[in-house]
Length: 494
Ligand SMILES: Cc1cc2nc3c(=O)[nH]c(=O)nc-3n(C[C@H](O)[C@H](O)[C@H](O)COP(=O)(O)O)c2cc1C
Image 1 (spheres, rainbow, N blue to C red):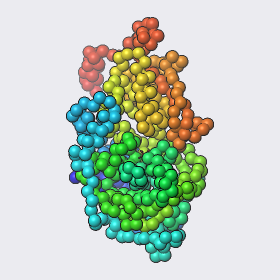
Image 2: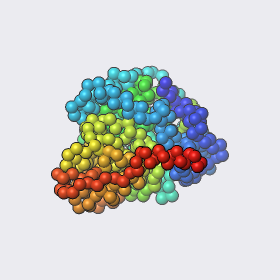
Image 3: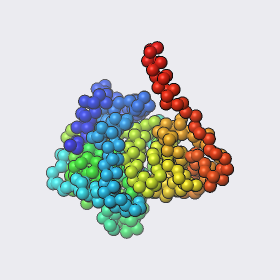
Image 4: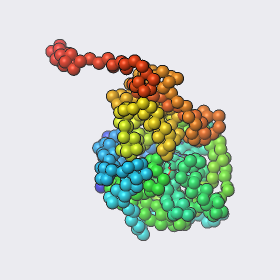
């Protein structure tokens, strides 16, 4: 069954030997981040860390803090309650195979139907663990004496030159004022004071689009930010789901149990009832404030930019709430495992659009979009370019800076093997293409933010129709017979 609380997930990590408890008091200003950075960079992603006594400016917080809880393939699988996330991929494949779709659009709608058919529809409840304790803020006040505020939550300052403390794993719930469609995305939030934060939804993200609709109507936008609960919620919020596929439905599918939703106390939105904290509030049309700098996924600080301001109207929480967080920075970091799980889970959907696609990987060095390796079963000339262009047109794959396409017998999860094919199989001028596309807002390399060039390499064997007049050479491989003999000989010697 699904996790009924974040604490239950933490317990499962501990039972699996995947968690280190830290009972010593540790500062939230850089020190927890420095500890977590070492852990994330240790082989296989290290362990999850539970800081039982995080210190806020030297004083113990009443909430423990968990970090790196999804920072390995094993912990990602534990978060989604499977042995291996490929199980989920197989389930999606089954749903898609029920009636083979003819194109991607049909595939997504079939996937949506399949998800509806399973246990995905949310239920509505009146009582919720996330509202065991309720702190409302009076309109206009900057603090609430005696009440819990953002200063009481062990929010991290992650890197020395960060502009302040940042909430790094918030599940930001918004609603389209016209269609009523819900969205949940993870967009970091810089803490400005006890009751206000930044809202870093980048221009290409759904939260920003919902915001735009409210601004055009000049209406205050309700926003609810959830922290914790079943880790499937956070995973769903980070997954690059196509527009219209509701994260709450997807989370219900992942956890094989409907998500129970409860109405917020001070705004007109619903949130999962079992999360640890809910920050209720609003964004005011036209109001922005400088956000950053922040040590980002790219491994560099992102510059200060104007972003909307989130005003809190209430904080509700479980009595035993745990504050979940992460840090991003020079890879590998915890976020690599979230991205990796997304690619693996949605591989059947990609395969549906590209029948020649065998496998796909986004290696950690590329921090998601910078580097994509794809293997294909090549049949006809320029097929590798067709796949690249298709990917550049698909949702957040539009940001892919470098795409390398290899033949099916190359393991895309082995970067060294892909680089070998890239170097050996390409004539740079003939086998590369440069296109223009939207760029990730975080990418500091393009001269103009949000737009740039993207490059594709066809590292597959070349066909005559691709202007290669000779026979493509054969890869050097040892014979099976010789291998068997060596195995026998080594066993005797050993
Ligand atoms: C740890 C972490 C932090 C993230 N921070 C941001 C952020 O600050 N702003 C943003 O636009 N996307 C951020 N993302 C990426 C989005 O969560 C992701 O693109 C998601 O698919 C967006 O959802 P949407 O398509 O519903 O907008 C972050 C992802 C992770 C894993």
